[in-house]
Image (cartoon, rainbow, N blue to C red; front, side):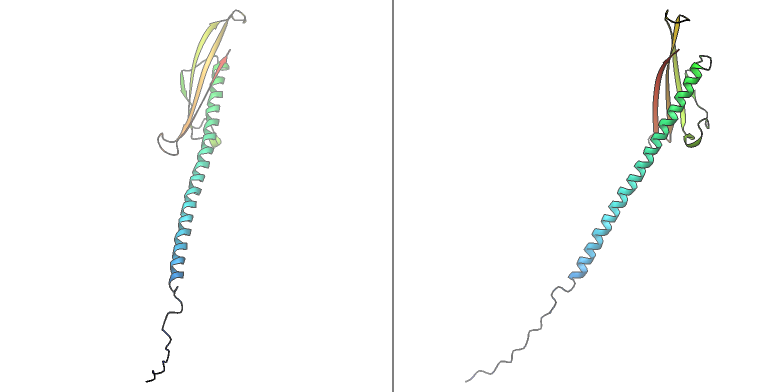
Length: 151
């Protein structure tokens, strides 16, 4: 007996076996790009805060220098008076230095020096500290400068 002719039926297979793969890839790429965006925003925020603190540090240094110059003037031109501890009144420093608390300390000592007209030399040790903000907080800044002068 002769076998019946086979009528080959094509198998019903999915002609696109990667259906759904594009969706998974797209979601993965969105998650990766969103994560990179969040990381870049964190870096940007930290950079901005660092720049702001750098500017505040420079302003604090200038406020401390201004306090030191004020103390030098008081000691040398103000009749030789050297107050042990003086806080500059608020608003003494104007412009961009306003808002800084400046504390100036001064200590003086008199030494004999026969080479001078008066026979003595007065040495002033001045320290000026400028600060803004509350200690322990991220926006706190403080700078201190000192000088020794003789008259």
